[in-house]
Length: 322
Image 1: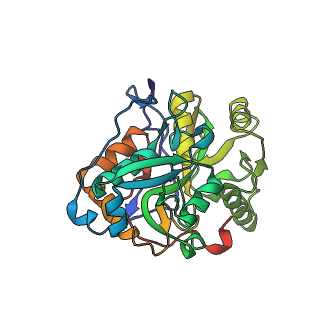
Image 2: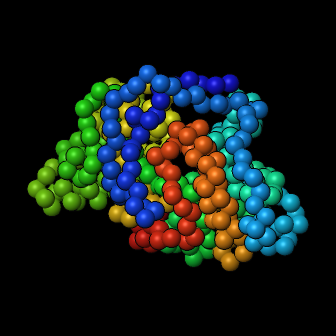
Image 3: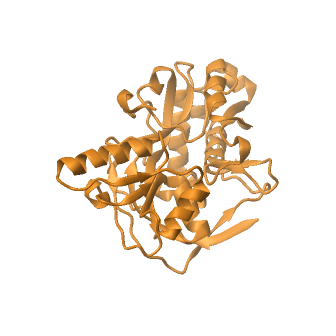
């Protein structure tokens, strides 16, 4: 099944990428066009693949090469979150950008991906125990996580400011949210950014934004559409998918998930198990042959593309880790 929705090209952020990093705060263009993008949510969809590269496959530990498979933990249990990792129309087959990235990496390494869905908490337990060789589940690089895990990056980590369509709002920094009412999840990194920006606004003599908390995504969006809040600050991938499929809101700005440093999302593996270099090299091969760009385009996330996979780059500071 294909869901046809307005194109995301004019709805998502045009990021300035310099030396592999983007602006921690950037503005999204407004407006739309007549073109369309289709989300394929069918169980039988064809995954975008990349050809095996023997020189990279030989970097794998011998035991992994001999197994012929890459066991991937994915947080799509319970339905998941589109377009990241979620279940297809048959309510059981995992699909999404994270699943396609796993297929890309496995293809370059000459391995068969074995996707196992799990909860967020059990994902890390599975990596720790060796049940999963890698986790591909929108896992942000952080300094605390780097103590236990190795990362090969493949997407920018972004949060998005979502507004009612035609609001005229733009968010490029703290001043743009002064005096606004903003829906945000309690205890999240997004809330931490909002509170940090409030401190900056108060120090500059500007009014603080008012946070509003709700119980579910449905409640957040009802509040936004009814005008009870001016903005909703949440993860960029899910905001992008909602904008495209609901057609009632727009993204008016983004901010790094690891503000004030640029957030990055990485394929995650147990520290020092010998996999991370091969994972990064596989991702870079997919970037070079164009298959990586096709995967992000398929799921409307081209704005989160990185020019190169990095091994264990600087991540979210420990004092900001939730």
